[in-house]
Amino acid sequence: MGLCFGVRRAIRLLEEAAGKFGSLDSLGPVVHNRRVVERLEGMGVRVAGGPEDLENRVVAVSSHGLSPQDMKALEGREVIDATCPIVARAQRAARGLARAGFQVVVFGDCLHPEVRGLLGWAGDGALATEAPLNLQPWPKRLGILSQTTQSPEAFAGFVACALPPTIGGGVELRVVNTICQPTRRRQASALELARRVEVMLVVGGKTSANTRRLAEICSPLVEVHLVEKAEDIDPAWVAGRRSIGLTAGASTPDEVIMEVEARLRALAGLGAA
Ligand code: F3S
Image (spheres, rainbow, N blue to C red):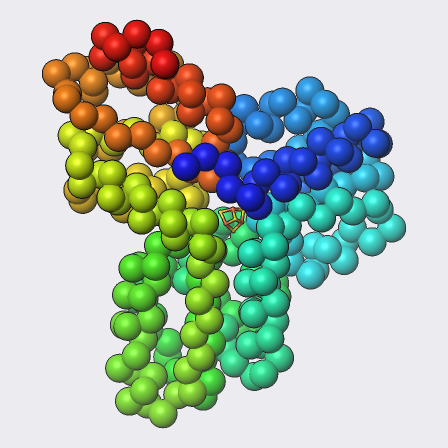
C-alpha cells in the first residue's frame, strides 16, 4: 500500500524542478492527495486549473498525463513531464489503435484527468464509459482499453458484455490491457485482507480514483471506511472490533498511513505504533 512508483517519480520530479526554478505551475494537482499538494505548494509549485490559467514559464504535467492538444498549448514553456510511464504506455496504445483505424473506447471515468488525456490520444469518435457498451451502429473495428486504475474484474466484465454484439456482428475487436500492475497487486492484497477482518480502513484522497476503487472492491466483503487522515476515524468503527484491516491508495504518503495506524492502535488500547 501507499505511494506507487509513478507517484513517487512525479513528486521527485516536481521537488527537483522547484529546487531548480524556484516556482512553477502544475497543470492540476500532481497527485490526488491534499497533503502532498500542500507540501509542494510550500516549495513553490502552484496548481493551475488549465493551460489558460498558467502564471509561470515552467509548467509540470501531472502523473495523469495530458492530451496532445493540451501538450501543444504548452509550446514555448519549459515542461516538466511527470506523466506516469504506465499512463504514457496507455496513451501510446490509444494512439496506435486510432492510427490503425479502430474506434477507441476507454473503460473509465470520463471526468478523470487521465481519461480525458487518453481520449485526446484516441482519435475522433473516441469515448469513455463505465456503463455496458451499446454502440449504434457498431464500428467495423473497435479498440478497447482501460483507465490504468480500474479493477481487472470490472474491465473483464466490460469486455465480456461487448463480446456477443461485436463477434456476432463481424466487428474486428482489439483489447489492450492497460491496467497498471502496482494497482492490480494492491487491489489483490486489499481483497485478501478484507476477507480476514471485521472492518477495513482505506486511506487516501477522496478524489483519488485508485483509492476509491480500493474501497469499492472491498465493500461487498466487509464494512469499509475511506479516510484522508487520522482525525477522520470515528472511534465507533473500532469499538469492540477484534480485527481491522488497513490499506492505502497510490497517492497516500507513508507518514499519513503511519498516523492512521497510530490512532487505530491508540483507540484499540494498544498504545502508539
Ligand atoms: Fe502509474 Fe499505476 Fe501509480 S498508473 S501513477 S503506477 S497507480
